[in-house]
Image 1 (cartoon, helix red, strand yellow):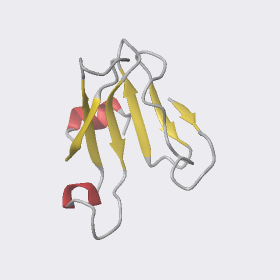
Image 2: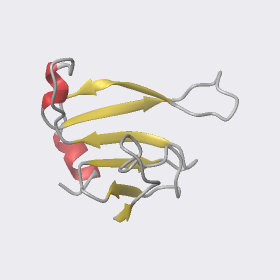
Image 3: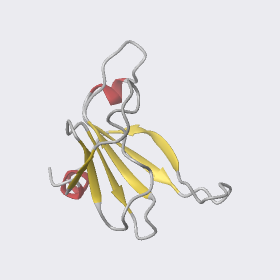
Length: 97
């Protein structure tokens, strides 16, 4: 597991890139978000600790997963992030939790 810190700034301080080393998992510095990269290096799955706020969907107020689906229409092949869902046991295993 590799911990990544990205550029400074309120929104980007703990952001993890959508493309990384193939078949790896990266966590942000505070350990609140992780991304699992597939064989092509694009993110396949994202783990988030619960978010706060009135506009946050209920499922995202606790630990949750965002699946990333392939997007053949994106010029770089960047996948599309899906809505949050409750983690399964295999999800926890994917992120060594």
